[in-house]
Image (cartoon, rainbow, N blue to C red; front, side, top):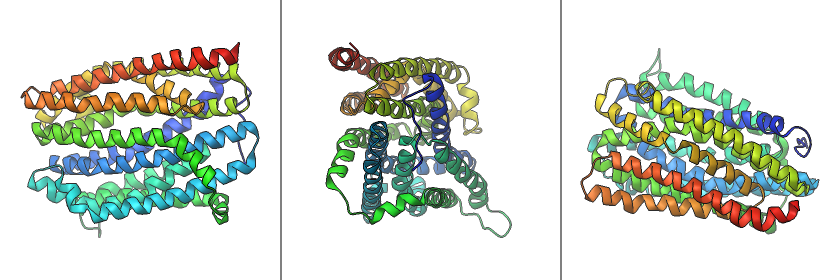
Length: 446
């Protein structure tokens, strides 16, 4: 089994070479949604609102899968650091099996409660109709939200981050080609509208899964082994806090979407598109966070604690630099970025520009939070970032309800979101310094 040794060599070089493919893969994953929004924005604002609303459940499925993908990534990297290759195989086998089981259960529930899910948002009749059209192929594509991230997590844990990048690049190319053809029609292909966007994503994600199976077929040979509950428990223990945080964040975001709908479909569309644009920051830094957790896990497994701390410091410098750059970009070029997606709707454009500029203020502290999360995940302390994130993300809801019932402007919702992101970054760094560095790492380094 091919693996990459991260316990030796230049730290900056190792982090950057590992992170760049992960970052690129993250951007490619984001581009699936951006491509849909790019073309749907030219179809109608109702299509953007419908796809954005239903899309929250894709986010929820991905959040659940984080339990396995992060758990297997950390476990595989840690075992490689310890040179325990037998355990690596068992973690791979159990993670894939569990992903298949959970994926089937989730899709079954989505099909069973289709009507209740869509009507939960209380959307306009025209948007509701489009949401039903989008739903079918969208739910089918969710299956790959469980399988593909787990395979990516395994490869990242082995230090083989280039393979997911190549596969996802090809899949994105498929999506880019199919989106306009299926949405608007071309030649003998009849226009499918919003349904075409969902079908394009389904075909692209399925293609990615097939390519993963071809590239690493040996993973699926391990499925012959029986499930080992102790390995599943380890994956669960590591990944559950992260999955809980992501699931609750997705749930909170669904509730926030319902609150934002109070200001109309323009506000929903502006927040959806603005969130995708703003994700430039957290996807970029998230790539370094994943690379950092792999780097930290391998060196922690090899008991190289000085290298663990050096990795965190150098990773943090990179992430803060990214935060400064994206703050400037989002604040300065907000109108130009938004016009790429909503060229002919000035009301939505104005709401979105204000959203981006207010959120840009919190980018640097968000980078601090994400980098620290990568470090803590790497030493298997996944509970701290999760608890921190859950608390501050939950606070959004009562504060936003207060804004809604006070009949204040939508801008106050954006201020609440940005302020709480800043609080999360400060809080997690304090937790790291007081509970982890002073009580554990400093002792090991001494």
